[in-house]
Length: 168
Image (cartoon, rainbow, N blue to C red):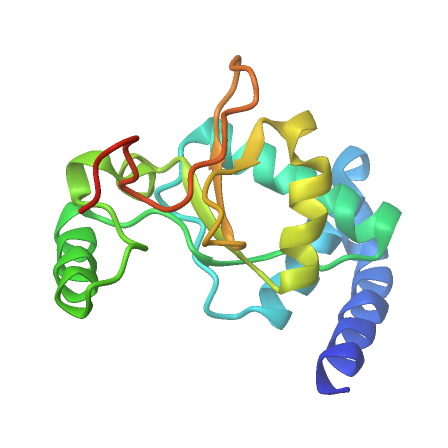
């Protein structure tokens, strides 16, 4: 119930922000108002460090999701530096998990991966993301998407680090 209320407030806020967004950049008012409203809804979101292509694709996708489909799309994690990725990898490996790659293999480190939220937003991105070259990559991670322009849709893997015939 709380999520529905917050989503409704975010949508109302975006509509109210359309006028100042239009005054700032008439051709980009919907994108700006959407971004401003979602930055208030997801204040810890950090899009810094994403490649220009990844950021543009995600911004375009979230704007369409928001205005055409009334779906909120936020990011819980985008770019990570190699040290942070290494810490996450060591912690995950110690638990015996299969959700984190070492830094040299992680698209988060290269700035082309996004962990998105809420689940409804991730589902929207799974359904529509190919138009933006954003693809869900792993079966065990509903939230993880990668920007892969100019490629055929990648085959989904069971988990990060999966290699046919090899387990880690």
